[in-house]
Image (cartoon, rainbow, N blue to C red; front, side, top):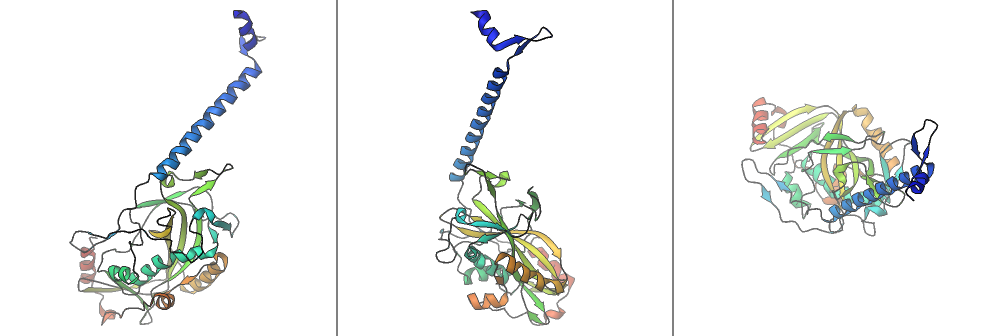
Length: 339
């Protein structure tokens, strides 16, 4: 008996040594594969459970120089998308527009309407002369439109599927800080146009979500949209605490990152910070914006749109701003900003 079961599992090779029979090796490989699949299923279940138990979104805050942060009560609101537009991001299609590019178009394009108010806030507070708090109040946010808790983000590059980690940059978030962007003596703020979007996960054959970065496994962000924020040659004018400082600026494009919170009580886009700065000749900005609009079915968000949509025209520039170029004022503003 003892010898018979051994002979069914082993045979003696030409070298005289006992070796496993082929069917035994195959059975062991199948068992190993089943164990691996079982481990993945437990891992995936853990991820789903972590998403269900994710902590509530923290209250955003605006700061007054030298004061305690002011907390705002948050009441989650319904989706800020167009009527009859799907709020669940799993119902969106991410359509490739260029071969090999990670950046895609979202269908239906009504999804982009959810970006309107966060972009309106940036237009107003980062170029049209409204203070951060004034812009938030005029746009009637129930919570602040940004998430500044993401110090660095894993993002997909334009080409390739390997994420890169980039530190997020911000403009000052103090409640009383004001900034204008002027050209030709007039306030122009900036121009926004979509640069592309993608999911924070890949769908595998059985419908499971395979997140390409651990950062999003327990996050409520299911999609990222990268938005180009353009300024031609002009002037940046800053004011805080009675100090005004004006400095010339060359044309450029910032890449602004927005995340979509897919939880039903939110279904909203949040500004996550700037990932990159690109010097672009002023003469190339307009043609680039037109191409992006056509490729991605993107709106063009600018000062004229802000005024028409939300009634927020540019605030008047400080009197005599052209001569407010003192480095002493620059240092004073930086000091009040804690820089």
